[in-house]
Image 1 (tube, rainbow, N blue to C red):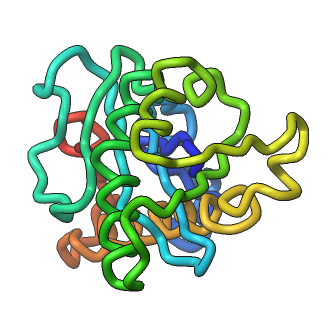
Image 2: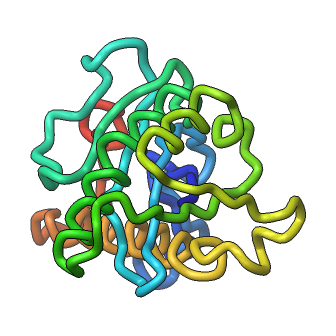
Length: 194
């Protein structure tokens, strides 16, 4: 499992403008607004449902969008994962996934599971460790400075996820524009982006 910041306004180093233009503006390059995507994969490479953490104090900060039903949409005051969102991830994403996997593979429900985490503080607090123990999930931590070498989602997954978001978002914005010689306008208001 790993958390990764995702820019609300995806930026890309590709641009498009009329031939001969002197300046090409990259939309959203200076926009720092983010959400946090919490992703996990199994040892077999199966991607678990995603948790998205939006910035805000109530569910009003959540987008009005029909996400896949197995995803978990939540919030924290600053969009960062914390103890509460980590416990929500365990309860809403990890435990249902493990229960279904054990059932599909005809593994006894009491069989312990293992979760590999980095040393992020919210992973190591007593409340989170207690929730893991409650569900018979053992935890191992990737040593500091080694996540780029041994954490599966740092090696593959996070980069591809962000690249796909950037590419598909920009492509859809451009193809949704009318066939008009006027400059393409992309709406980067938070309400539109959510």
